[in-house]
Amino acid sequence: METGWKERAIQQENIKDEAEPARAAYERQMGLDQDSAILAYREKLRTEAAAIIQSKNLPDFGETRTWMNDDLPEKNVENRLNPNLSILTWNIRNGIKAKEQTGYIKSIGTPDILCLQEVDIDCMRSGNKNIALEYAEALGYKYVAFTTARVEIDEEDEKAHKAKFPNSRREVDIGRGGGVIGQAILSKFPIESIGCIKLHKLWEDYENVTQIRARVQPTTGGRVAQKTKIKIGDRTVTVYNAHFDNVSSPTGRLIQYGQVAKDAENEENPTIIVGDFNTCGHGLGNWFS
Image (cartoon, rainbow, N blue to C red; front, side, top):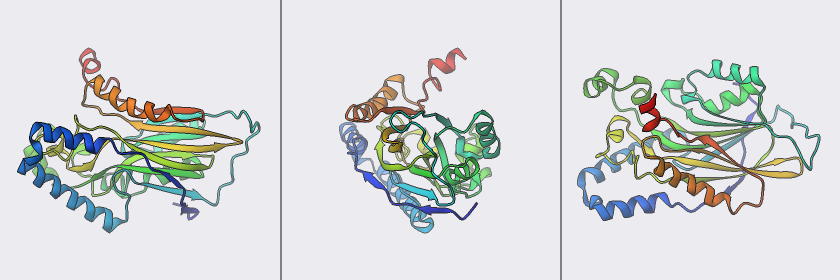
């Protein structure tokens, strides 16, 4: 990694958290707010996550870090009033295949803005690297914004885990190595501000021990959508980078998309919504395949 990267403070947009109150209301309605097993497991996870965040100086769930590379020049904009723009979105699955993925992006032409999902920072499975900066370095991006979706907690070795969950996939379920995973926006143009929409998680609550996902994948946090405002010439473009739930019904994903769309309706700037929408990852999509 080159030395030109510096953390860069930018404007943070405060977006109201609707997900946590909805989860709490649901648990009260179902009587789960008094379930000692759920409460104890949630407290255990949050204590372990807080220790990881503090010891490694990482952003917590919904928090953002931004960087700028002083060694790279600004991209020239020929038509400042009506600039051209290219954008690409990719779920890179932790950046384990960074060399192949960045090589492919170079082969098709590096876009002005690259929106990534499942981006690791300081996780063992991806070499304890800042994957957002690794991709930015390889592809020549000057500006980077990362938002944490989950704090990964590595609590079991492979043999013990396989004994409990013989059908689990190692690269997903263990060996995370105590870091964070989230979304990143890489840009050749200045990122002026950033916000985070915490998406509803009633179908995929990693902190609810009664759900199989929580027992297989100990982690805190949830799904998020990044919101950035990017200056391109004399125009500002709002870009949302979302990662929707993959275990809910299409209705659940529509609810999450609705959160993003509702926020976007208030934008005066040209607006782009991209990401991993998980539209055919489960349900009928899997059945027909």
